[in-house]
Structures are given as structure tokens and as C-alpha cells.
Length: 302
Image 1 (spheres, rainbow, N blue to C red):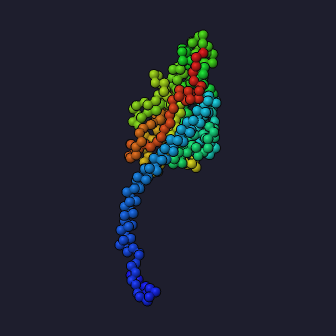
Image 2 (spheres, helix red, strand yellow):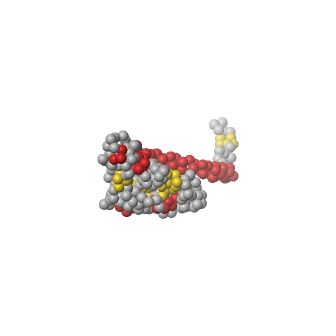
Image 3 (spheres, rainbow, N blue to C red):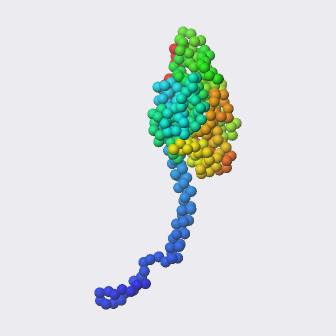
């Protein structure tokens, strides 16, 4: 307490305005408790915003892919995630992607995007895999297919062979025209659920729903992605390496059109926890037919 003298010469006692040490300690304790209580909530909200941003980026890429297919009648090969060129890797003599698509990320320059466009909410490059055979010239051009056709698909080079539509298709003879089902048979990736027991998508008859390609954001833990600088993230940070997520790593190879562990991707509900349940990947997996239809090169009557 301080004493001051007024203009009449009388002393006045003034109450101190500062906090005592006890009051400061109580205030700090309350702030700390509030921080502990609300940190998980704010962290969850931030993560949700990053997941939403990632979905927006995936939609932008999907649109760019449709534009590329409309012009080129095929899928692009992935870019090498260790590099910053943004260009698709070369194709071999059969016009399949060299390197079995290992280290594959979205080829941003090839499809007309920027590097920032193909990074998810956590600044990881989005993984990309193209269905076997669908990077070959005119592989996605169904304009010479006819829904009423009865012809078996023409086969081009490769193992296994990849069916294409017959340019000799004429309306007076449906036996010269490839049907939609014959074209789609055995094309695209298998997509399975988290347990691996249930097929969500499959090109095998009678499903005909194989995924033309997959785009994968590896989520908050980043397990299996390439960073913005091209560094491979082999260990989840934060969290654990999910057993289910291991099927979606950017280092997975796609060696052939035969469904195997290496080219069967997994999609499951969001879950964080043990290695057995951890799954925060976000997948875009359009069917072969939906990609063709969006590019407006689908089958027509001849």
C-alpha cells in the first residue's frame, strides 16, 4: 500500500493494483488446465481442415486427369516422387510405365498443374498409380466400341494382353464392334476393404468396375508418402505404421494387370490407433468407365 500527499497537504493511502503471487499462480493453473482441455479439440479441428483441403486437392487432380484423358486418350504415367520435375516417367516399348511405377506421384507438369496443387493438407505429394495397360496410346478411347457389339476385344502387346476397341466397327455388323463389357473385362485395379476379404471394386467379370487409377493422400501420419522436398516418409509421424496403409505406399510397384498384393489397394474407414487399425489415407479411385465417360470418349452406336 502506498501513501501520497494531495494538494491540501493531506496524506492519502492508495490500494496497490498488482496481483499477489498466489493470485498469479491460480491464474496460470487455470490457463494451463484450459490449454490441456482444449488442445485435443483444436488439434482435431485443424486435422479435419487439412483433410478437407486434401479432398479438394484430390478433386482438382481428378478434373485435370479427365482433361488429360480427353486430349490424349490414355492415362499419364506417374512422376518420380524423389524428383522435382513433375513430368511423367518414360514408357517402355509396350507403352507401359517404366520402373513399375515405383515412387509414383501425380505428374503435375504433365497434367497442367503446379507442385502445390498435388500436395495434400500436410504438404505431402499425392501418390498416383495408373491401371496396367491404360497408359498405352488410345487405351481409353472407347469411341469405336458399341454397346450392342459382340466382338471380343482386340489384343495389343503385353502380358497380359490389354483389350482395345476395334476401329473397324460398322453398324451393319455388330460382330465387328467391341461391346462395353468385353472392353472393360479385367481392366483396372482391385480395391479391397481394410481386411482384404471384400472386393470394393474389381475389373473381373461380372463386376467390370476396376479402378482406372488411384490417388492417395497419406493423411496426418504421412506413412508411405513423399514430402514436398521429395523425401520418402517410411515411418509414420505422428502415430504408427498402419498394416492396412502398407498396401498404399508410394513405393508399391505395379508390374502387371494380374491382381496381386502389390497392385491391390485398400480403402477403409478413418481410424487412428494400433498398427492393426490405423488408417488415415484418403483415396480417389474412379472406375475405368467413369474416367472414359468424363473424358467424353465413351462407346457410341455405329
